[in-house]
Image (cartoon, rainbow, N blue to C red; front, top):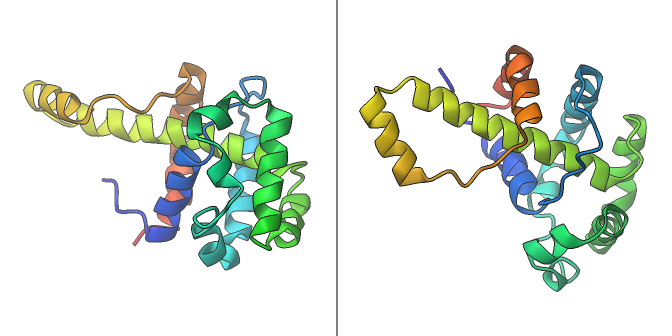
Length: 174
């Protein structure tokens, strides 16, 4: 059964779903990429307080609505992310972790995380609905709607690697 994510892990998923509404469909999710994302996310643990508040007081992030940000080119999104990191005074620390894990830009890491986060959320939702009787599942579906969307290939990837993902998530659950 799924357990509650601790506030940091929940915060990471929320940040990925809310502040990074951009996806690079060109990048194919692979097990190596998943492992690299896990390692990077784990390396960010000592910075969790800073990352939890990232962008809350950012003048840079206030310049764009989610929709406007999503419409920016990937290069411009990368530049905006870097500007937010610089504004918050964590650019060097973040890029030290990213560089150690072979990420070129913070936006690249965030885009992969956003895709994984959405696919994980859809997978969890599907698992929950599958465990309910048909009538209850329909009621829950109507009440919650289907706001979370993920690419079918991302959902398939997460489903295929669910045991590994669930193990990783369990490390950050209460």
